[in-house]
Length: 219
Image (cartoon, rainbow, N blue to C red; front, top):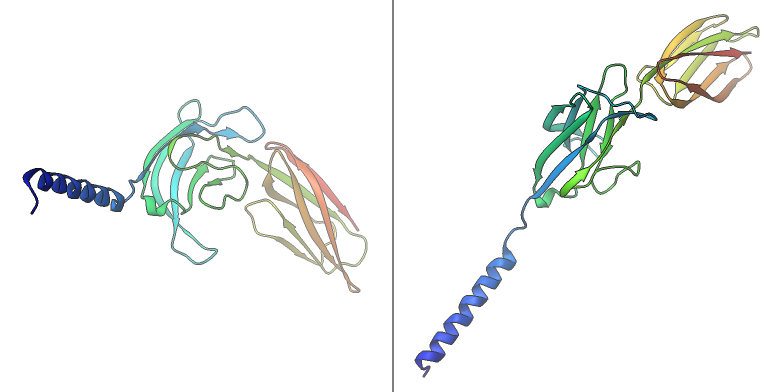
């Protein structure tokens, strides 16, 4: 038979074991993140005030298609600063969270966090994080066609730009303007269709901030 002291010792042992098993089975706490930084114009020290910055979670959709689920939205202050304080369930730590930034006459952008950041620059979850996203300004590219040989179709596919591809049937001396990314080398591919063949040409054109660059295509 257990004496009183042995009984007490056994009780304490069972109590410690119970607390240990409860603590081991306890769900991990949510991940708290304080994210702040400054929104800049790309390739410059110019900050962007009163810009819209959204913190979103990518959910739903298929393998390559996601829907934005808004977590929070703020405006940058007079010096381009923004901040978010948010919580992420521990079991969702490998999901994709993004900053989506908008500013007039600038391209919107997404800065990706999660298990597979695509551009090598992103913010992490947990603790105090500093991240300074950048936006590229718009620029305008004026294209002038100078065709003296028979061409029945011309098309151009810019690598950058929020516009549809340009297609012209039976071109000769047409001119057109497309919106492209400023402060960047814009890689353009264009196709010239002749009665005998089609020719693919890839060219790189520098477009400055909100400037108009002229590109003449001779054939």
